[in-house]
Amino acid sequence: MALRCSTNYDISISGNGNYIICRVDVPITKEIARDYSLDVDRLSREKNIKRFLFDLRRAPNIESTFDNYDYAYEDMPDMRLQRDVRSAVLVSPDDHSHDFPETVMRNAGYNVRLFTDLEAAVVWLEE
Image 1 (cartoon, rainbow, N blue to C red):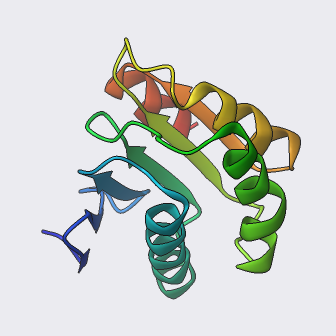
Image 2 (tube, rainbow, N blue to C red):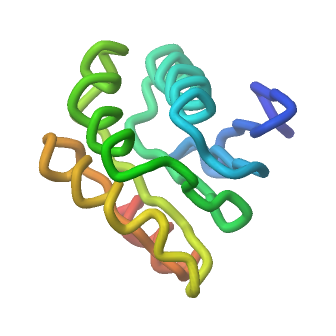
């Protein structure tokens, strides 16, 4: 059951309560990423859950390299997103549009890791 919904994504808590799930259903722009990031962060603070699973298998990143860099180094700090969280990003095996964003987010100090296997992502989140 989704706790937070928009026409672009829905957010819920895993069955065991260990992590927040955000499933995005549209191509990702900075604006959409900003919206769901703020919603996930708000729920994380309310429920004290520091593990996130972003299911982006139906959501290729369509932003430019510059916009991805700017989002990681300017937008994320401006939104005051927590840095003490762990974010697993689940992508389709043939989608490499999230590779650069993962790199810049990690370089900017966020604990983000890409996965193509749901089970591996969940194991990493629950370590």
